[in-house]
Image (tube, rainbow, N blue to C red; front, top):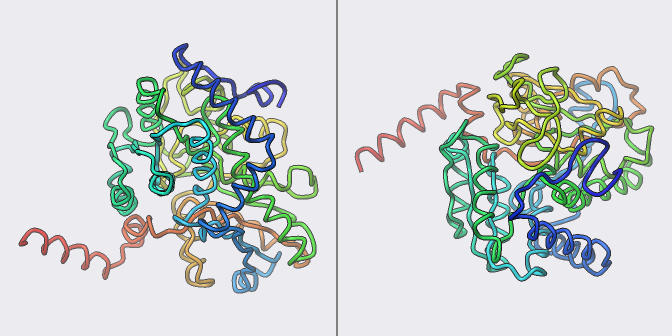
Length: 410
């Protein structure tokens, strides 16, 4: 980071004047906590006793044999409470919210995992909670909406714009402007105005700290490559942070290739050539935008990667060459998930399956003495409707039709 809030040319805090005192308060609380070893110990204890950390490192024996190349290891963030890496960030921000004396939290969510994690944290700490979610994502992630509401969160469908993640972020910021005194915005990824990208990455760094220790202890060496999916970039920043100082470890971020190249067909900012540098939603990074800076339509089978921007930290790492970015299409993702489920009994979320897909393309060409690590950032319980539809499973289709008839006749 060159100076406060910037990562090379990316980052910053482009916010309305009314929010400046709130961001100053948040930055002060974050920097104070970061400088306090007792805070990190409190955080680790909370994650151990409430969320189940450390998450294990699993050797994928059957997939390793199937591809015949490098040994495949999986970092199991799906085993966190709420089923994804999102708990790492929200529990840390929950502790900060307590420090600041706030009583209400708000959040945006796409895939719903961040929303569930935030609602869980709010229930544990006794905060009021409002979740903003694009109307399209509410429909395709209904199981997560159900659990958010059971935990007492108010889920507000966002009907503006494209009705997906970027629009939910806009609504959350509008709420925050009018409720700053008692409300903290639990931003879910390593994007947005400073200090969010750095702060979220700090909480998620627990993934990389554990993964590096586990590789050395259980495998006896560092991985040759580390793979993570990239939407906003929090799980990738979490895994990659453990290996930034190890140049022999190649870091590979995998974006949503959707239906292929072309504006509106994908949500890939760095692997394809459709994104340009701009300022939106309070920060400077690569966005899928037109020549006038208007955000473009995106598409992905995975709600959590369906976003127009990317972490400014990852943009800096992209330009420096430290992280390589690739894209996986919807079909490749479904195929990778299906293979992983069938061969290994692991059920990666559609987001995580992007990382699996790219690793599967490359692992067979690597030396059997090498090892790779894939971050399974979440599990696919939330994706059952999307996956069953993509696979055109006849038994699932019959089940849904039967249930619909039951409700109609009730």
